[in-house]
Amino acid sequence: MAMNARAALAAVVAVGALAGCGPGSAATAAGPTSTANPGLTDGVTSGSGSAPDVARAIAARWADAGAPATALEVPIEFRSVEYSASIFSPGTPKAFTAFISTRRTFVVTPSSAASVEAANAAPARFATPADRALWRAEGTPDLGQAPTGGRRWTIPAGQYGFLPQGSVMTYREVAALPGDPRRLAAAVLDHLRPVAGATPPVGVQLRQLGYLIATAALTNPARSAAWQVLAALPGLRTCPSPLRWAHPHSTVVCISADYHQTQVGFDTTTGAILAIADLLLQPSPLYPHVVPGTVIESSTFTGAK
Image (tube, rainbow, N blue to C red; front, side):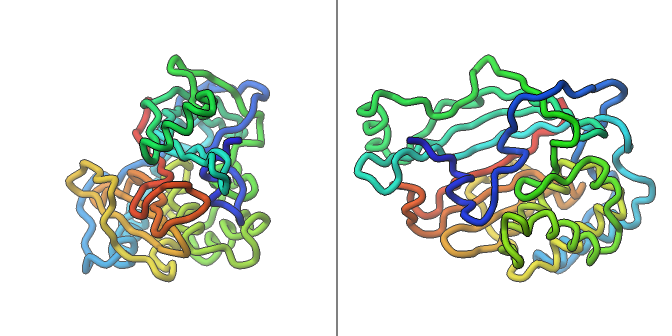
């Protein structure tokens, strides 16, 4: 029996919007479409090089940017490549781990309806050659890959949210987020607590903020506030990444907890989020045969269609 990596990772969180939702009424994509994850257009981010300093410098630049970077009340679009683990029969001698890649395109309307296209992005990878052999011995069960030719589904109005875990934060809730960091942090935590408890793990908070910045129609004051909240997370530091994003101005910040590390990579020139990833720090029964240092889950944001 397969278990998705996000479900395994999230003993305290639930699968959210980026993990995909079921079919529903069609999203109406009438009108212009704005690209999510906007970038600053001039200047470079200064700072000491510490993770909090760099994040605060980006926050200051967004605060000075003036008008909203994303037009409100129009559909927004973003694309991502999702990399995740499919785990079969954990805790048994037949356990194996495979990694799959899915290319997704989202178009989200102001009513928080969405259309989603998904297609397989790469051949499956196995944690070890023995894992591939176990998969074959079990009759090559489905790994959960999207069709190579793609598939499309819709999410009904009010049901698409811009946080990967927790309750739905709709398009219009995002548009109304305040420019005050404490109030914005409180709003994010309110959506997260139903699944993550009274004090959500700091790494989970980092993931929420990264997705919010990368995918939502934030006003510039709210985008600045989100960066300020990110900068204030305990344990935030810069770190190397095995993803090796080929970008001349990329920086990766991370928070480590328990058996894994959450990473957010971004462009220090534009302030755009490049990717979010989880890295295994120590062997875990949740990930059979996966060695420490392996990326167990990632989302790479690839811009507009």
